[in-house]
Amino acid sequence: MNRTSAPVDAPATGAWEGLVTTALLGTDRRTPPGTGPGPEAPVALLDAAAVETVRRRAGLRPARAAERPQPAPEDPRPPLPPAAARRLALLLADRPGASGGGRRGTAPDLTELLPQWLAAANARGFAPPPHMLPALLDAARGRTDLRPAALEFAGSRALWLARLNPDWRFALRSTPGGGAALPHLEDDDGVRQLWQEGLFAERVALLSALRSRDPAAARELLATTWSTERAEDRLMFLDSLRTGLGPDDEPFLEQALADRSRNVRATAAELLSALPGSALAARMGARAEACVAIDHTQAVQAAGVTEASGATAATPTIVVEAPHECDPDMERDGVVAKAPAGRGERSWWFGQLVEAAPLGTWSRRLGGRTPREIVALPVADDWQGELHAAWCRAAVRQRDAEWSRALLGEPSAPEAGGPGAVSLAERAKLLGTLDAAERAEWVAGFIATHGLSEAFQLLGVCAVPWAPPLGRAVVDALNIARDAGSYPWSFSGVMGLAERCLDPSEAGRLDALLAVPDEPENASPGAGGYWAEAFQRLVTTLRLRAAMTEELNTP
Image 1: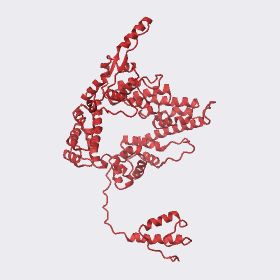
Image 2: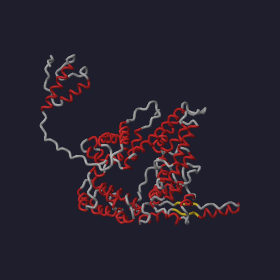
Image 3: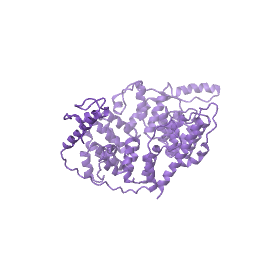
Image 4: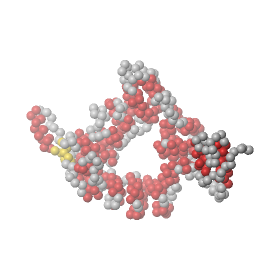
């Protein structure tokens, strides 16, 4: 092509980057080298870019052809039913859009249904259509909460793809051992070689896999190199012993109490305290017992007063005498000597002793009383909060359901907090020690008494789909809030949980709530319309979830 323009000088080093910058800024703000402002500047820019493009291509040296990748591994799992495959394509294609004025409308949020769909597909052992793997990896790349279920569903072919595309390398990092193939656990030589020569991630994956199958063999393998491992590696390896933790692990953990690393010592002490029959638990129990007693003097004095008046004798009182020092033996057993900012040293030491003591200690120490009777006893000198909070942590660590029930109290109690729980987080952890049915029943009773304002965190620990009593309690509480003219936006979190967790069979009970209600005089303007939209979306989502399940169950 013939153009009349000024000659173009040979570009210097970095010329391409300079031309790109000029194109981005515009030739009216910056001109190409050797050209002044004017109508010829854009033409000169294109000429310079053409010359530099030829120069860049001509300067490439031929490279050896890359090796063709090995074929993707076969996936032996059965393929998805066609209807379920179409549903997955719709879920992967959906992208969250900008909300208009805060209103979500009545359409289900498909992005929130994808995790549930993946969990159901994984439970049934299906394999994804190969052509959907890139979209599945892209979805998991943007959502860390989606990765475990998405990578399980994608299977080994996802790792094969991740090695070919840097954008999907997260799949290798998210897979134990970085996606490396572990030897058969029966192959002793292969296991030993990988343990001695493998990368750290591979060794963690190997130890975790072996621990799940044969806890003793995993512990013995760890012992072979324990003294030569780095402190941060010892900590990670020790954490793997939580799986299958049992009395046979005690000798190894006792040795770890003398470790050079404070974090390793603390983890070993925590694991030993989760074994109520361990020697460390006994030592901590003895120390904790020395700090707690029943004050019979107050009970006797009160009894003398009540006999004269004809009233019932007073309940004995628990008294606490916290430790006055943290000696080296306590530190060796995992007690952290330095208290956090704002905490008194004695209460800090005391809480750690009680937390690590076997819960069976207290029935013996406090007159053979049951956990519920112990928790009901008054505690002198404002020590109740510290003592009950430590019992909460001990009940969670030792998975003791009886103590958890005692500390939770009755869900219908006037106070929203239990007799020992100091926060919603503590109550949620205590609920985690109960079986799914009892957990749901307790939370349903709590909602029936206290409503939904404090129940969001408790709902998060309940099994999905919610058991019928819990589902009915949530729907009834939402209906009460609607009839009272409450702000519907205050319940958007619970409504979102209900969309994901309410049993789809409950959809029929919600039809009566779809109409726009009459708004009370003190109601928020327009609240009725918002409530109707929210219930319509809930019903539509439940029916969509039912259809998803049916599609996955179709042969």
